[in-house]
Amino acid sequence: MRSLNKARRRGVLLRLALVLAAGLLALAPLRDGSQRQETAGQGGAATSAGAFDNYLLALSWMPGLCAAGTLRADDPRCGGADAVPGWQVHGLWPQHRGGSWPEYCRSPYPDPSRSQTAREAALFGTSGAAWHQWNKHGSCTGLSAEAYFALTRQAVAVLSLPDPLGFAGGHGQFAPAALTAAMVAQNPGHSTQSMITTCRAGLLQELRLCLTRDLEPRPCDQELLVRACSRNALRLQRRRRAGAKSQRGRRSSPVDQSPAGFFGQKSCQEAPPPAARAARGAAAR
Image (cartoon, rainbow, N blue to C red; front, side, top):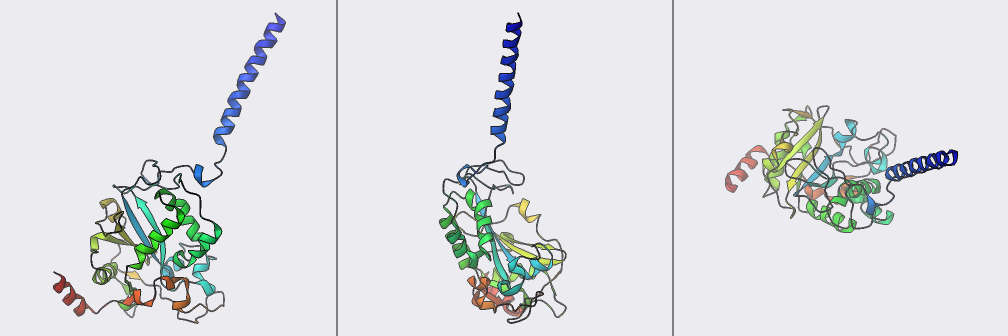
């Protein structure tokens, strides 16, 4: 009888050990990009890489992003020789219809090497930012890292970005609608319904463009439009001039030598005066 009870106890302990081992394996972290856990993003269901409907191209106005504290104070894009003086690519993000999006998908391709992300620093501001955009968003496109970076360059290369300083008054304020109107005037095919501005602490943060999978302008989903900046006027954090000292005492690079030089000065033009915009709009209609 005693031997039977001992055998039963050993059996119970063995089953408990097996259950515990299975639980530990389930909690073990995934180690590489090919086993990355698929994540839904806000309001969406988990999807496989390549399963999405549209793109959202996010472009950051770096002076406002840094001044509002959106980025860390020690971010190289906010100070020193690597500070970005104007527009900077944030990312090209896959989107689902209805306003949700996928994140951190299980990509069939390997993660980019350090040399690959270093080559994309001019596009995203830093190599770390390039890695983050691939890891969070690019992995969900169904593309390789190289193809994702090339597609992002293609999306921004065709744009002519207005310089908000061109229509900000002497008090340093402007209406978000003025920025989108200038963007439409300089980029045929886009409309005020295919883009939104975002803001924080009364400062311009980003311009976001709604695109098809073929990178053509499309009307933004209503769920995105309601997240647009609702302020009638924003304060515009001005760019530092070439050679101006940063808060850390170092000199910033000239505009055409900074990472933002990917856009080029021709893409960051002053908005045309109101009369010229009106004439151009009438001719287009």
